[in-house]
Length: 210
Image (cartoon, rainbow, N blue to C red; front, side, top):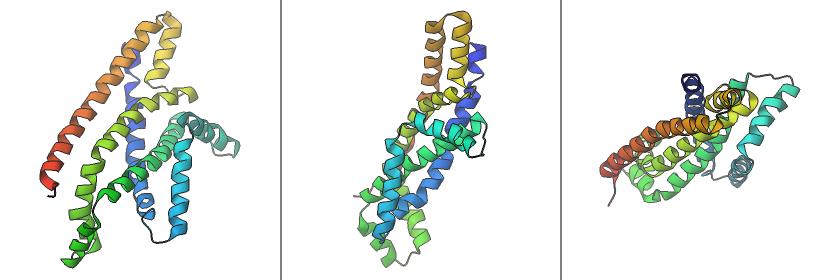
C-alpha cells in the first residue's frame, strides 16, 4: 500500500497543474466567444468543440508521440500536464461561457451606469456572480480531471494507476490492489466536493440577487 501511495504526488500534481493552467488559459477563450466579431466566435467555438470531441487518451498520445516525431520531446509527466491543461482549457472555456450567459446583461449595464470601470465591473459584480454559477461545474470537472489523470500511466507517468498496475503484476492480487486505488481516489475526491458545496453556499448567500 505504501508503494502505491507514493503515486499520489504525481496524480495530484497533474490534476492541480492542469486545473490551474487550463482555468487561466480559458478566460480569453470564454471572452472571445462573446466577441462582436462573428469570425472569432465561430473559430473559438470550433476549437473548443474539437478538443472536447476527441477522447483525452487520443490527445495524450498525439502530444507525447506526435510531438516527439516533430523533434519536441517531453517527459511523460510534462506531456501529461500539457495535454490535460489543453483539454481543461476547452472545458473551462465552455463553463465560463455558460456562466457569463447566465448573468443578466442588465448587471453590466447597471455597473456602467454607476460609473464603474470595466475592470471594477468584472471584479466586483460579474466575476463573483459568474463564479457562483460555475463553481459547482468547476468542482465536478476537477473531480473528473483527477480520475482522468490515471490515463497518464499509459505513457509511463509513475502515478497511482501505474504503480497499482505494477504491483498487481508482481503480486497477482489485482482485485486488492485496484480496490485500494479506488479508495484512494475516493478519499482524494471527497474533500473537493465538500469544499465546493461550502463555497457555493456562501457565495449564494452573499451574492444572490433578488
